[in-house]
Length: 162
Image 1 (cartoon, rainbow, N blue to C red):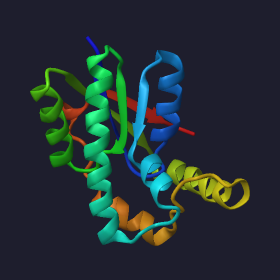
Image 2: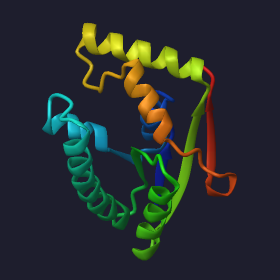
Image 3: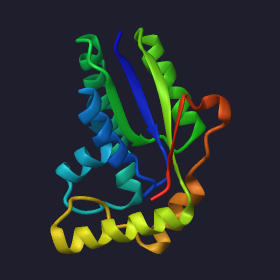
Image 4: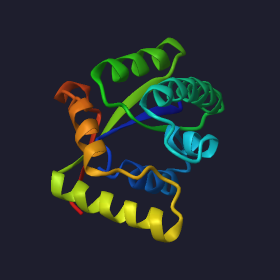
């Protein structure tokens, strides 16, 4: 039976890199809220509007995930799952539709995240990478919003060291 994998981790921890590798290795399909948002809106649309649009995108991608799961394809949702409530809600959603959802927690130390964000920000400027630029203020704000998953929530731990 196909499974949903919920990709959890702080901004810059390496979630998208992990998802890309997972997709290449398994043939599963990755659904990314950031990819959809950046396709629809070329720039950051502000915190209030971003939250509303992100919720709509997530709802759309959840329906896409159900279609793929129903066809027997594993799906990884690259959404971040920053709060325990969001993680519980996602697991409940998929369980209510007859699918198992596993939480994959991508963990990286602060210095590794600093390097990742610097590389990403540079690639946005020099290579046209389509991603959100994360400055020190945003990073601090996002870090404050992130709830580290409890041990019993985590189905798979991925420790990123570089």
